[in-house]
Image 1 (cartoon, rainbow, N blue to C red):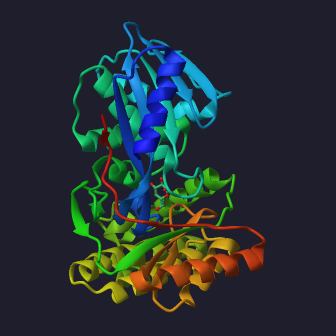
Image 2: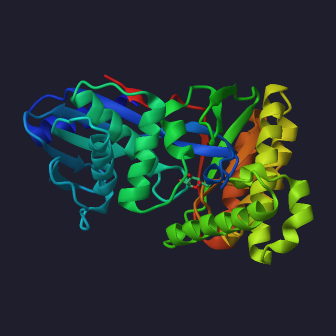
Image 3: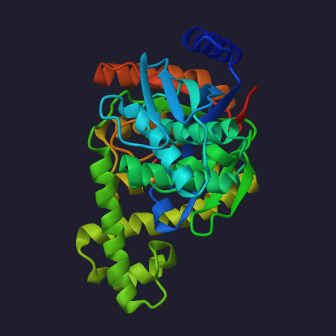
Length: 386
Ligand code: GLA
């Protein structure tokens, strides 16, 4: 972290010929369990990872925002009085959208110069975009000497992604990036946005295995899943008064009335409803120190995502299958929206080196791809570094 801090500070001075004011950092996340539940008013249990987006900035006297991305080697600039999409530098649209949403609340921002740098792999399901949005929200607020409640920050970042970027994501990623706590996972109720930090187990590590596959159509398939969930709610709501979201439907309800749903919609609902129940159980397991039970719930979550929600891929299934064969692996599942990206695994500390070796070798043998495997502790949520 200190190396990157020094690098971004130097890059800022070289690019803008003036000193940095402050540096903001916002982490990516890995979701331990509770996939595709957030937009169903459900429960999730993500944690922040030791990968983040950093923004070094200094305010300007005018209303111009000049962003320089070290990763893309590109600059994108705009006026806060005329915020439009930049088709050429699409990475900047997250920052543009966040500025627009902050101003839409009635706040008046200041212009700024900024250098952006991240080390969260893009498209791996580890929330690089949410981290960038949250980092930019904190940057704009700091540059204008404004303060805002972190839950509001998360909501604004999500709105920017929904309305400006056009991805109908839920609240999980922005929320945990803005509010996560070191050493803890965050249990979030996505209906009322209450949350509780849950300590990560001792003696077991979170291992992230990136399949190095990316799917371009994630956004489309994601929005389609959302619509299918809404259809389930519409139909079930007509026979079950009080059902506002799949959060309100039990497995018994589904057993009773599932026949009313088109088969594919019934399967989507079955995943969401069972996944919500798994998250609640998983939190209890963590709090009771039952890491094995937690791991089993992760395994079940993967099966449900693969068979009922149909958002896995053959590479994700392969990675999970390889992980499960390694002694000391307590649980393995895909993480994030799916279709490509990474898996999350809970592995006993002493088994980690053998796990990494066996999974990397097996995956490369089968696919010809070199997976990126990292162990991450639960990192702290976003903040101003210096
Ligand atoms: C993406 C979205 C989240 C969530 C997950 C699936 O990461 O941004 O809101 O829906 O997919 O759990």
